[in-house]
Image 1 (cartoon, rainbow, N blue to C red):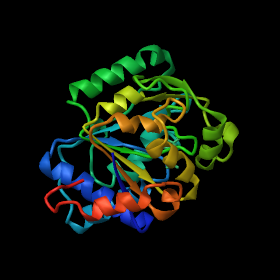
Image 2 (cartoon, rainbow, N blue to C red):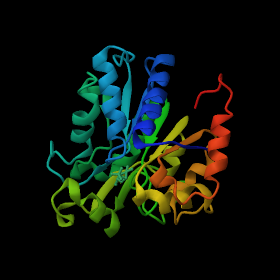
Image 3 (tube, protein in one colour):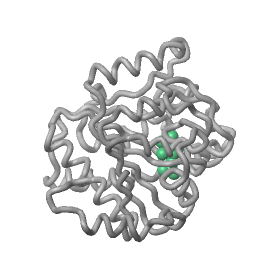
Image 4 (cartoon, rainbow, N blue to C red):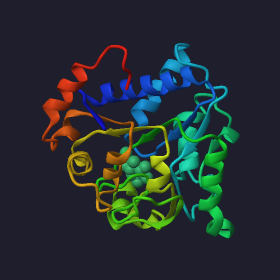
Length: 261
Ligand code: GLP
């Protein structure tokens, strides 16, 4: 795992945007794995800014797969991850709605939703770069503590902490759905490059556990330790709990110029 301590959340967003653009330039039909939540928003704004400035790559042939989705919201609800990702990224980049896929939360088909999503991901050729945030309890996508490290896309029940954390998108925690569909930790591990972003003091504890703690379902994000190509971009507030922070920075500063993230 490559941990990159950066000077600010803006630097995190710049480097994340550079990485996503590089993947699309290398492979114009790349499959991008998109995350929701507040953390990737600065990255999304930077990608949109570059797109509007005419300096970004063409997104005409990319495919996007989201990590997770709430169950039980009416179609088109602004808090659904499908609506959120369209509003915050894919519509402004001009990516057609049919090229943006997510787990299908339709109640009547819930039992097969996970299997169908896994099949769609496989048929698309797998994810090139998977953007990830981390929950304050160490969750990845909606894989709460205790999730199997080998899990695939399935229905999950949210932890109370997560419903409280996400209440800001709904008005109150009572309005946050109890159930979600989420890619499993095993699904996430299949992406070719994992790019975890962590910003703000609320993530310091979970990030330290994920990066320097034991590999454990108790901290689902620690599953990154198993991946051959995982990059963690972190701002000073989120890096506070990292014991080897200075070493990570030395390694990054000594990185050969030819070696990208
Ligand atoms: C949410 C999402 C995750 C996200 C995490 C952190 O519940 N399902 O994919 O990474 O929690 O969110 P935020 O970036 O808003 O802190």
